[in-house]
Length: 507
Ligand SMILES: Nc1ncnc2c1ncn2[C@@H]1O[C@H](COP(=O)(O)OP(=O)(O)OP(=O)(O)O)[C@@H](O)[C@H]1O
Ligand SMILES: [Mg+2]
Image (cartoon, rainbow, N blue to C red):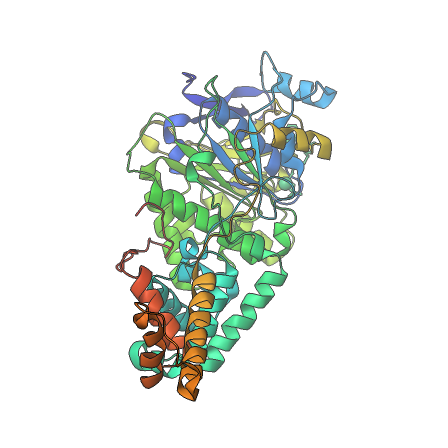
């Protein structure tokens, strides 16, 4: 592993615009989270790029979303373009070396990277309800669905499993209401319809197996660099709720799966959350509270979370307060709300007597930012007006051919490419329903006198139909009961769900 202790971010400037000093992110505070903000085109993505490069070089794996495709260039060697070389001189980056980084491309739709999947069960009722924008009553039904699945040993892997379970619940709504509280046919029906919408938006690809193994985003190369997982998010952004829910799920998985490690000399993983406002936009308070909790606690698992967004006001105050390392690019200040954002952003910094923070924020050039990193003892440094270093990798997107090559050579090539559809709730419910139906048909045949024949020693088998017909159950009931009998005992009944209601594997 590389024995550097900091990441070079750029050079701060004195009031007369001359070089002041190097600004650096201390790796030992890399898990104290961070924030990159700024208006469109001010340099946020490049700042994210140089931070990701720095973490990777320090042996820290990185996960980030690529909203516009322009971050993909991090996988390619940079080129000595004039403005980059000049920038390198200005920030005294000497030598300015070009480098390509070990990137693993991921894509929820499996088009621009390895497919990334999660099971319904892992996602859990809280995040799913958020994803589907369910009402409180519908969320109640969703919770019951998960409880039934847990209790009756029904594996919920993909959307059709959930559909099958909901259909089954609708069939026995009265019986379920008596046991669990209100399960009405209309509320179940409403959830079923929302599921169809979700499916039509391509979410069916995302739910299922093989599910993402956290270890695969925590890889390092043999020469000690951290892998940079780049999630293609251009198409995903058309469904912002899926985007936000997915990243939340990933964060909660990291939280649930990683052991407590306390403060290390560098993080175990950093996670960049671009377009972070989507996380909090019309999110219910309970979810915001949980996110706040995860962000606060994930630090001791060695994970640093860096939010990237246009406006610091997008982030709830309690979360904002936990983001130690700050890079504030230029903001516009035309409207009252924008002026408010500038003031808020300015107030979060430890002031520098050399300049007025709020004024500076509106005057920063592209690729220039107000920077305040955590210093000794984890105290925020006095804010500095900083020219950000140029990246070592390519600025801008890669070509589809370049992408294909990287995907083909990736360490996870072949592992996630094909979906696996193993037996789960859908198949179980279907099979049991069919068995019940067959038994019923057979019983009917016997009752009508068609069964004078018997096979010696097989009385029991034929008798089953008789017994069932004498004690008639609905098809659904029979199906559920036999499912419980066959697998109910092998699947733990008391399933513990994590902080965001997700279900970590291996528990
Ligand atoms: N540190 C830097 N060094 C050199 N050039 C930079 C730097 N930062 C930004 N630039 C230049 O500014 C352009 C815009 O920066 P960037 O794409 O990072 O903006 P952004 O804030 O991410 O914009 P958007 O909100 O539209 O995504 C870059 O393509 C690059 O040409
Ligand atoms: Mg950008």
